[in-house]
Image 1 (cartoon, one colour):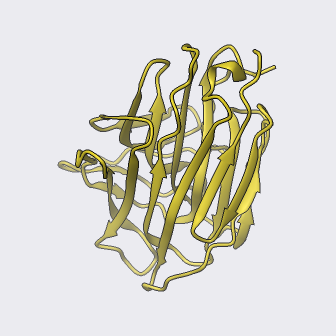
Image 2 (cartoon, rainbow, N blue to C red; image 1 turned 60 degrees about the horizontal axis):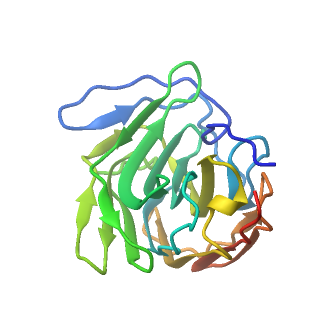
Length: 250
């Protein structure tokens, strides 16, 4: 049975919104201690069907990967999202380019989510329509970084088949991003596995990441299915993530 519950990344921490002209920003998280470097997994109790996760020993300043849009579900109704991105050290803010199925079609857009305690904030920029089989490029790029890894960020989401591009405004964050999410399958609502793409496969390719001070690491992802559903299988390499599942009968 699929549990329908909206839940973002865990370990809440109070943050304050910092106003700046044309820039979105948040204050440092009080849980801003370094993560344990290496493979990581997500806890159960949310909407996480599949995750690949890696903690960097140094602040991250750039991430890029390609997504291949899976087939459309044959049965309408479900809403779910597939994405890769960066999470901050305090695990309170996420930078992500999101492939979303809204029960009838696919869209792709940059998203910045922050604040998981009493007040959460979710900023989504212009969505572009995309289609099954399209190759999507995700870029998360930092500039104006200080020595501690506090940067200004821009998210860029592009459909390489159609040439459509959408991008975020500059995001000013006092948080430090050290967690790379090579792929996430987040299920929001629906009647069950029957509403997923039949014998589906989601491919994330050409995963690349850059550390401050501008080193190229080799991620060693941890693979997990925190809320195991739909015979989900997760595999990964330093540059690729694959989710494979079986559509059920409800």
